[in-house]
Length: 392
Ligand code: ZN
Image 1 (cartoon, rainbow, N blue to C red):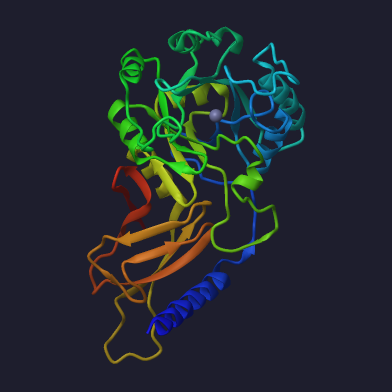
Image 2: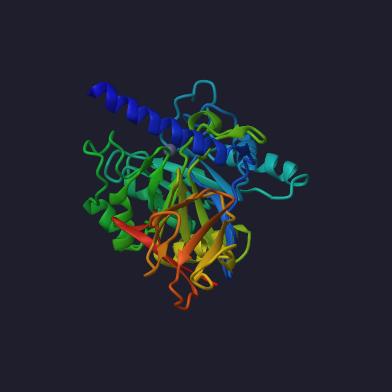
């Protein structure tokens, strides 16, 4: 009995994989792509990374190379301000050095690449909980943040420099044994006094629904970052250009920033205004007002045609064939919310990254002006998915 069950499971697995293999096998372009939305550019960022200037394992120029490979628009190297395990070899008396080294290198290579990379000066204020680890980006001088005996002073100094300040991995098990992100009085003080502006809902390999809840209830900007210490390729299993990939290729978590234009000032304005969305594994996470316009630009109704039959005893068919095109690097898992049923599948459809998917819908002769869909892999609040409308 168990053997038979196993056999069936194995067969289903093999058939499913063969289908996936056939459909998804294609040459891979590593650079991430998401379309701009109305009035804003969609900028791809990773504002939490480490190098040998704290406990990371690479020189800052490698972070620039990785970001260019991933097609990012802006990054920050946020070294641990108070944790310098390589100080014997890299004394690092000027805490702006990681930024300066990366920025010099980026300025040089930006001359020869289409998509310019912006480097933002940042630092990770590294304290026990509370407040835990806090990133400050868009700093003028990182050295002024170092106040070893006072958790608040560094954060206040960052704010004096008009930095954007966000709380890193708030549910990190090393600081929250239950893995649950929650606010202490210290955090409430920071939020009430506008000293804290964002929160990571995604850090490295982890997504925190509790952090998303905190973000929404306290109007904090939703952030997702790699917090990379080693190599992006290794940790996130990123294929290289032209590799044959199956299913969904690995990528680092990114924060999409919806900015008026591509420069530091606009990125900072957008972060303070909360215009972000996170792409992490196969998930999109963000406030509805940001995620809805993005997803509605990623998915387009390519064409609508009446089903043509070679033979019919029942007049012209009222079934419509609809081509949906996904121009982004995110897959979409969609649930039909229209009153109509589909002809070839259930109410759940998957649209792979950069692909065209055809569905046929039984309209029974009713007017059909578009699709209403629940995006099962787009999260706008705990236990709440995005609903979109794709109009013809
Ligand atoms: Zn970190």
